[in-house]
Length: 120
Image (tube, rainbow, N blue to C red; front, side, top):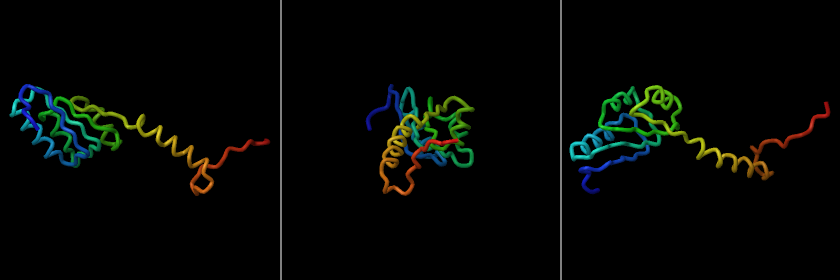
């Protein structure tokens, strides 16, 4: 909403498969006078090599997470305009917390076994 003329704009989406909608939005923002256009996508799948359309597309930066590890590796190797952001620092504390809670709860069938000392 608003006038993008002379502004920096960031488009945010949850997932990209073909990228058509994101590319069209980016192009329209450029035509409307946006100075910089970037996009952030949580899950970048880029089916059938669709990421290549972004290389010379309307975006200064394309931020994606590493939720799709295979694609994240491809885009990290390629470099600009792609920047891969890792989810590990956000997810690891939650997983550690879950593991601790499940280890303390005997009713959990998948709780990790308690360590024992070996007498060997």
